[in-house]
Image (tube, rainbow, N blue to C red; front, top):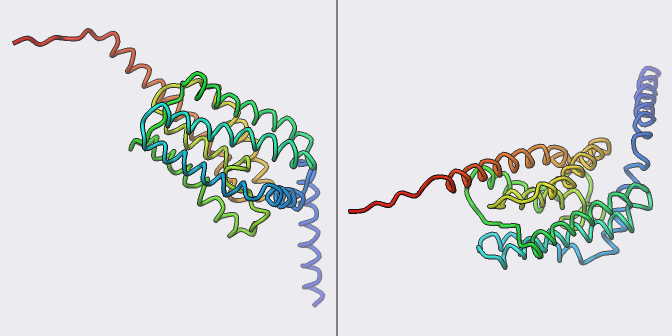
Length: 252
């Protein structure tokens, strides 16, 4: 019994030391973090259902080519970033982390940029295709909307503490990478900067807090951004080559 007590004391001491080392890295605890989500989810209900409806509309729009469909996808993404920045970061998360005001400003900026680029400038083109890039995009979309909450529930984060699709920063970011991987034309790389920044910030915090459904977030930017940049460069090179190649008229 004495030996068991000594081992238990040693385990508790090691855990307390680990907690002391981890605490200075974040200004809040896991319990505080989850409590914010519980309060947030209850306050905005049933916006979570609306977010799924809008997400489904955006995915359905991928199957219909046309400027109206492109604007629908851009609008859904823009609204998700704006609402998450204002409500989650600005109103709720800021109660335990003052950096949330800066995060909220970034999310609002990204939302405004998506709306401006996709609606005002009409410069985002989306469509379903069957290449490697689209397969990765589809995987991100599926993960953000379905796999993400299932992992959360399985690892001990049930409703209402579960970060929900379309209204929480991490699934919104993964979903955004998924849809941007469905673009068919080049677009401004500035649209990738804030999602990439959040993938690093949010993904790192998720590892520290052991929020396992967010672990993919940390690598999502490192996967999506190179694919988009390389793919867009190839598309630009092909377009330039086609423009410079003289047309040959065949005559009988």
